[in-house]
Amino acid sequence: MDGRFNSLRWTMVWFTQTIFYGACWLSWESNGTQRQAILFDIAHEKLYLFDLVLWPQDALLLALVLIFLQPPCFLSPRWLVGCFAALLVRKRFTR
Image 1 (cartoon, one colour):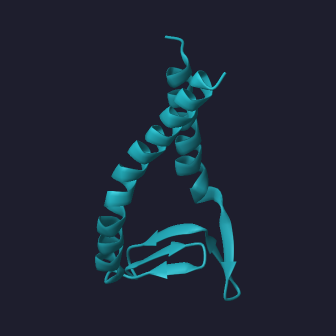
Image 2 (cartoon, helix red, strand yellow):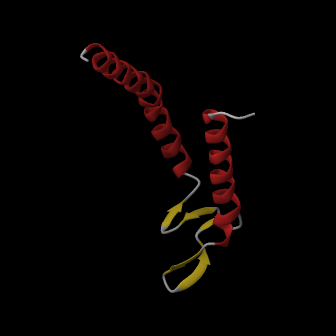
């Protein structure tokens, strides 16, 4: 199938898969030691994201942040679509 949204979908698939499979090959130096840039260390119960170290108790903080960010994610596309539609209408009728 051809189309703008199908091409956009496949572009995003390739982009996210490249990040998913390529991130494990990134190396990072922290405190004089070399390790993976994104490392899920099960033995020591840590998640390393570049210089950020997340512990298991940080999962609650992450959940709260995601809960508080949920309303803007659902409201902003409608707001943006409304502004874009108003801009199109204004341009069409001001010619």
